[in-house]
Image: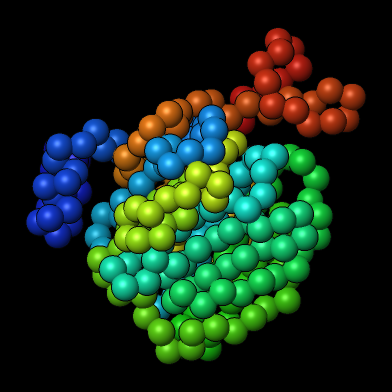
Length: 244
């Protein structure tokens, strides 16, 4: 019954696509998407209950990966494949796209562990915010007055060079991803803090009730965190790890 309700809120063409695919709707708290390798076949589409034009966006997630030059979240439209894109380019540069405009933000070198990223954009002012592990970097301005139109294709783990496709393996994500949320408004400072503590969920897409479609070899796994002599690891060693 839940899936039928979700489908009825989508355009008819999207309804037909979802009808013949294995679409899941689940509370993923305590879980991760595990992307085992870089490829053009491994990714996750995320599906809001209702498509809507976006003039304000906030997206937050956690990721754990040894790689850079990887796409975390990609939102594409028919005419703009980089309508909204979050892209750790290197250890000290984070790339962000809105309305196909590229912005390069210099960031601190983060330790090799779970990293929490939030990006916000407000069309009224064009102001873009990037938060990494609770730190706000210098704000930029782009695409004032722009609205991201519908239909939209939203994908975790691949950069779309066309709406819903055009993937390049070298730009794909490999590693673990969790706590993904999306809002149709700009998060306040207090809300950013609550998201960092897993106390505020998305109103467009929520990790607590996510509708998604897995492609390729992506797995849903428990989130496991380990500490040995003050160093954080992921693994399954008895007595040293906790599922969080």
